[in-house]
Image 1 (cartoon, rainbow, N blue to C red):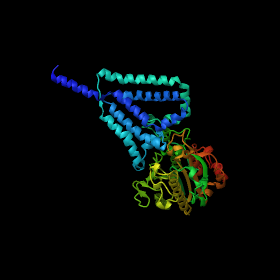
Image 2: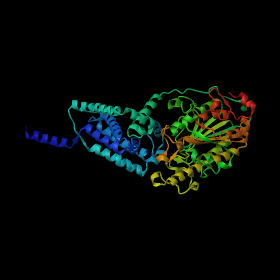
Image 3: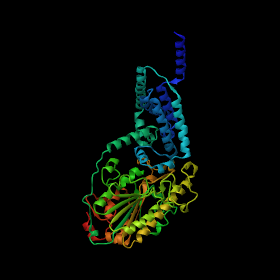
Image 4: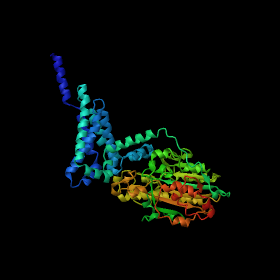
Length: 556
């Protein structure tokens, strides 16, 4: 052996001494993520396995082995670093929202994230979030990028990851089978358990979201309600109609004083002749799901994203009946509901009074609404999609003069605020919504040449720290009522009630009845006396409250 060969061999030995195999790097990274980024998962595990240390150890080792088995499929020299860097950064990001805010990252949450605007998402990038991701994601990623990978022959390089996968799967199967009955029972009863596992839950959610989107890439929309016609209420030529449907955002029923909340968040609506429905549940817990569902013909039990985008909605049916239908948006878009009607976005309005950096308070609607009402010559339905109470920056949803409940949390860093400060800020948003609705009602009431009505219903509710949960978007099976109970409020002018023969006293008798977003499709058609085979009067809250016999006789 020559001197050169000897020196080269020594160099190779020294280099390999500081190197690590792809499988070992994968195992160490998996262990890091498993232990560091799963605070909620470990907390739930310690609760469900309390007093059963052996079962606890067996299950956690099984989960680790399953994760390692999947990750080892990427444990090749050319793929291991990019994959593991992605995993540690992903886990750092998702663990922040799971551990700090109680948010579950499933398919619906990923769908919600995908339609979130930059202006909305920037409020979630807080200093605490940045530090969390830096320490748990970026720094570990730099370590992964820095370490040297030990290379072997082609056969060993190909076989070791596969053998690791098979061995890990076998170990996991053996551990789970050892106490399968107990583990199965736990997973059935505590669905929040594996939903909190990082990065398993978000990865599975992303796969499910990708499959859902691929199935609907070339969807053809089915027309419904093409038989829709106006009922007897339209026989006599009367005033043009203006019906405003306000799609609220993140308003929970529990914080409306109209529903008995101890804080006076509805001082203005309380002075107006509204019908307040106090027992209404939402279709979902996030806008991307709940908004299209509430306008669809499907009940929550039947609704799916695929059905929603493949079928026309109630606004299309109203349009088929010959009414003018318009959508105004001050949120993240109409989620496809307004594809076939006129739409207008207010999020980029240049209004210094209400707008700042890509977001506007809901007062931005008011001047435009007054102008719009003056131009109406035909029966019209206008949908206002609010910014409402969207968090975490509640303090940006109302003008300074509406900070009635103090001290209010004036940051997106909830840990910097007391529970009362968070609630105060949220209550201020509800009080501002109360003001906007009351102001809209007053505008409608002043329209002598129009027959007017307003129906308000929120898309979903909000958690304010109860049981460690914040914001919204929890899977429906585990979502608290704070996220699923929503306000619904109706106001009608005298001419509107007379024209459609609606008995408001009768409706007031239904205020405690269990209602939901399932009722909106059919109730809008019933309220506006639109006849179609698509209307189901079992879900029409107006069906039993018509005073004119001629209207009732001509319906259906």
